[in-house]
Length: 403
Image 1: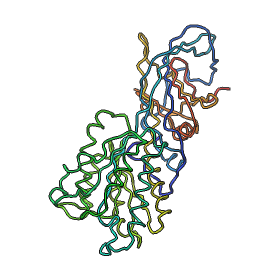
Image 2: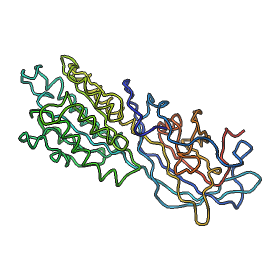
Image 3: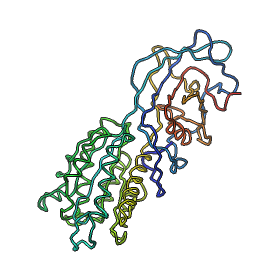
């Protein structure tokens, strides 16, 4: 399992391709009818014990699976028998579910230093070495079928206007590309039209504007994953109070709901221009910036693509909201089991400490509202080419594998 605010991308990129959509079956049970699956003494007979709370993502930070969006309830109900001890049986009420998308808001630097070949910016041929591979990798991400399950927006900064407008957060409250379901060719078309020839780097203004633009999304999808992705090649320039400390304060205020990831695009001559960007990432809850070297266009494109993929991976959540029990029934936390099917059915084991490789736990054992897969279990489900995840209610919880 991962924590939304504390988990951060690894400097060593992982770039495997994994599906975004997992079909989820949630089951709520009452006892009657013939048994179909025998449970034994490995199951918990009384109330579930152990500490609750959100789990740490440390065990999954370096996983090579691609992240998926948070699970959300929905769909129609069916009835399936589930067995219990002693010959009695549970009839499970299942609810099909869909996944809540990830929402990524990109703020993309189009200042002259990103690609203007004017030698005044320090490097000749910067467009070919820096701008072109970064734009190509960005456009590919937005159009890649593996980005299914993500909604993204794109805001260019600075705007092509006078200083007062460039420095106004309101100028960035409406994205150049509104939140759009991926894959989409709209982003590549927008990137092709913009030119890296604008003056100044009003980072505080764009960060503030994008945070403002995401407030409605945060309110409408409180259980989804959201993130701001800042792509820039240097420290903020021009505009009042536009410094690293001010930006740190702005992103720190929303890091729990909207963590800030930073991709720093170094100059071909070195990375001194992007060293301070680590501070923004740290304040935004993601610990460090991804620094992408330039000079070799093919290597730059690969590195940028891996940075974005790593950000996507850290947005995973394997938290399953508990459904409302069927009419006339009360949720019994000691009678819940979790499994997933990918070719064959795999039973997961209740483990409040998440010490097992096949464990799950509650968000709060004393008053649970969701089921959380522990990091290795989460990674296994993500890597499956196709999988159904089931939460079954009414049968004693397994606290160790059945014999």
